[in-house]
Image (cartoon, rainbow, N blue to C red; front, side, top):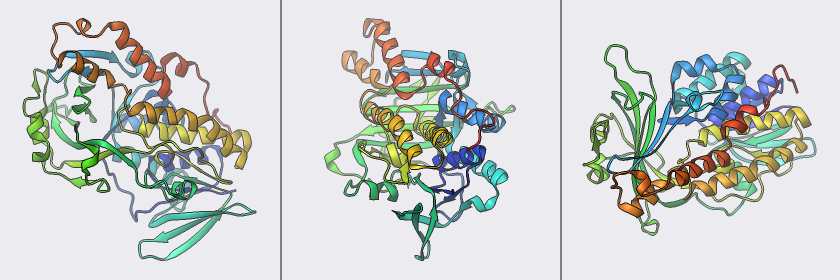
Length: 421
C-alpha cells in the first residue's frame, strides 16, 4: 500500500505529511543528498495556508513568515493603480503568508521527519522512470554516483519539478520548458518595510517591472526586515538565453541600468538591489498543459504537472492544494487508480486554466493596460482605467486560481479531522 513520491520539494513533502495524517504508508525519493533551505521569497495564498493549518503548522508558519496585509499595483512612476487588502484583512478566514521558500521547505521537512521518522525520505536518489506492473508500480532511480536501483509500491506520484522524469515518460517528446522572453533577477536585502509594513507590490509593466515584499518580521532594534525583490525584463524570445541555467549568480549590471530611476517616496529599489549579498537569474518559463497526468498507477503534482509563470503568487500554493486533493481522493477511493483518475479529473482542467491565464492575464495584466493608455503617468487612475474594470480583473483571477473569498470560506475541509485511509 506504499505511495512512492518522486521529489522532496514543497509538493512532495506536503503530500508526505498528508499521507501520514490519513495513515497511508509512503516514501519520498529526493535527488539531492541533503535537503537544505534554498530559494528566495514566495507567497502562500489563503487556500494553501488553510491546508497547512489543518496539517498542524499554524505556529510554524507564524515563526517563519509575514502575514501579507496588502497587495498593490503601481505604474513605473510609482503611481497607485490598484491596492487591496489580503488574507484576513480581506475577509478570508486564513491569512496569506510571505515566506522564504527554503524556510518553508525546511519546516515541512523537519515536521515530516518528527512525525514519520527519518526513513520516510530517501535522499541522493533521482527518479529516472517508472513501470506499471500487475501488482503496483516500479520506480527507477539513479544515485549521485550513477548506480541504478528500483523500488516498488502501490502508486507513484511524480513531484519532481519542472524537469520531471515522470512527466517526460508520460508525455514523451515534449521537450524543454517554454521561455517567452522574460528573465527574472531575484535577491533579498535588509530594509525598512514599506506602506503597511506587510505589503507586496508590483511596479512597472509587462516588459519591465519589479516586485517587492517583506519575508521576515522587522528586527525590534533596527526596524529592518528581509525584503524579497524581483526585477524582470523581457527580451526577444528568438534571441536565446541561458534557459537551462536556473540558478545562475548574476551581475547586477546585467539589469540595473534599466531601473536606475525607480526610486519612490516609500521604496528605493536601487538601494534594495545594492543591499543584496547575492543576486540570482532565472529565465521565466512554464510548460504547455498536457492532456494526461495519469498512466495506470502513476500521476503528477506540483510543477511536474502544471509549471506556470510565477506571476500569480500561487505556484507553491497550488502544489500544497494538489497534495490535499490527492489525500481527499485517497480517502474516498483508497490508494488506487480510481483515486488518481478522480484527482486528475478535478485538478488538471483547473490548473491548465491557471497556466494559460498566467501567460498574459494574470493579476498584473492591468499594469500593461495602464502603460499602453498613458505611459504610466496620470492624475487619477480612474481617468485611465475604470474602477469597475480593475475590480472585475482582480476578482476574476482569484476565482480562476481557487481563492475567491466566499467560495474558500464556505468550502468544507478537504481532509476531515481524524479521517483515516
